[in-house]
Picture 1 (cartoon, one colour):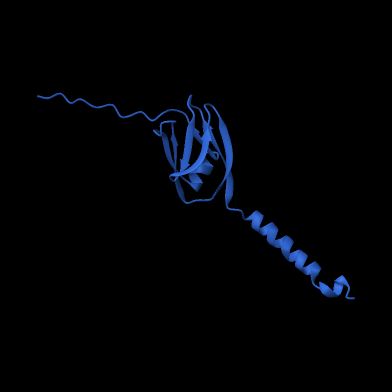
Picture 2 (tube, rainbow, N blue to C red):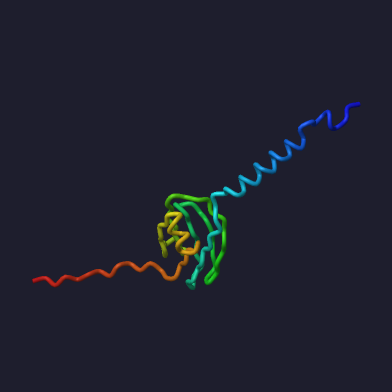
Length: 118
């Protein structure tokens, strides 16, 4: 019968390689924790580039790991599907914002300007 040393002669080397691969893949992880902060009085749904990202209750915040991106648009919609917040970030700008996306108020339609005729 063969000893385990004969069956796996390079096991310390293999183990070292596995440990190094795991270390470097986790150390080079291109993601970051990002917090969505709903400071409104309504439940919202957040989309990143038109794809569902999270649902938040009024005054709730949630933190998720996001994979690095070059640019992304985050939109929050109310229960009726109306966009109440829209913001575009680069990865760097999101970092500058403290890795937080804060929804503070509803998007209001622009007032109709009335130009006097005459």
